[in-house]
Image (cartoon, rainbow, N blue to C red; front, side, top):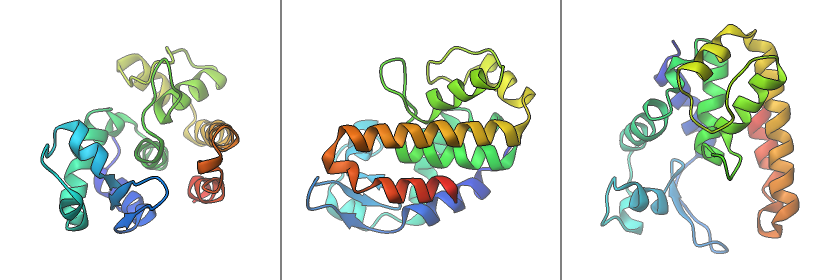
Length: 174
């Protein structure tokens, strides 16, 4: 099983500190957005000051509860693969049947590598067994390739996000 502390350290490094995007209005600190804090129920009365003052420990706890544990990422045996899956789930969301995200792309990569699982964004027991049965390096390479395609499609479809493509791809390759 993968270690959360190793994964979250990389994600926190990628996410950086406080930022209020003047174009989109997004308010974020350590990668945790005000929108997420409000919609998840973590702190229904949160405001910009709450996000501005969010500690690394609070952000880590949010990530552990709402991403690592919720999506069973710790059940992935290979640490490098788990690190990337966690980081990308934070960055692009888990996805689901209607919208591709980090977990649906992972399940697509499993299928591309010969594994069998439903592409639904839920890392249940079947998906986890299939992920852990495959060669981790091969799966990680396939995963990164499919994520790069997803990032490119997002940038191509949204001019407001097109400028983020270079950063997304750098993060993917890190």
